[in-house]
Image 1 (tube, rainbow, N blue to C red):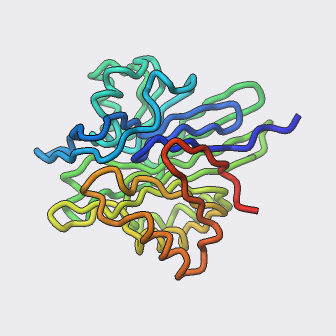
Image 2 (image 1 turned 135 degrees about the horizontal axis):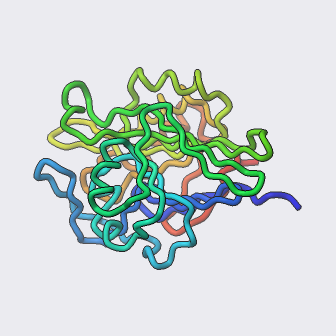
Amino acid sequence: MLAAQPEVTFIGTATTVLRIGGFTLLTDPNFLHRGQPAYLGKGLWSRRRTDPALRIAQLPSLDAVVLSHLHGDHFDRVARRELDRELPIVTTPAAERKLRRWGFRAAEGLPTWRSHELRRGGETLRLTSMPGRHGPGALDLLLPDVMGTMIDLDRYGTRDFRLYVTGDTLNKPLLAEIPERYPDIDAMLIHLGGTKIAGILLTMDARQGGDLVELIRPKLTVPIHYDDYPVFRSPLGHFVAEARRRGFAGTVRTIARGETVPLTPPA
């Protein structure tokens, strides 16, 4: 019997359900509803514009959570209250320390390039921490540590699928090492939005997103994290237009909240 193709369900912000092989992952759980404020740190709040497509109680059985960083629009008070405390959470070392204080005993912080593996039958799902920078220059020191995640599915010792989840990073020179270490990326979930606070760019806008696609060269790019909060200033349409201008629109698949799409390239 053929294995099911990998797929993603978009819940909102950077929150997705990933089904890869026999494994199911939740990314960056943000389950606040429209009108509720998310705490962004340093006394800053942003009020959500949208509703999540699912509630935590409606999620499928999960094998792990992949958390790029500990901001209130990526791990909110609903997640803190309702997620299973025994669920593995793969995240940054700094986020691990706080999550464990909150009672999430299976949180594991990965230094850059370190991996956590899930195994079932003849399948191994390897989650590897990728470099990331949330802010420019010294400002990054005031923001939570952030990581991307490379997700590799091996079946009986042979790699079957590779997904890169960028996390809330800017496109910085340190990302150039990713395609050198990890060529042949099948799909990329890219965090966009062009988040700006006090005029300072904190997540990739359309131009930086286009630059990253050209650097990583995935077979498929799925944009997320682009319109849920007022601090997101670069709409999805800007990235789609940038993809057309640069000639890679055919490898971009947009996804609506509540929609499930395959993580395989368009035919």
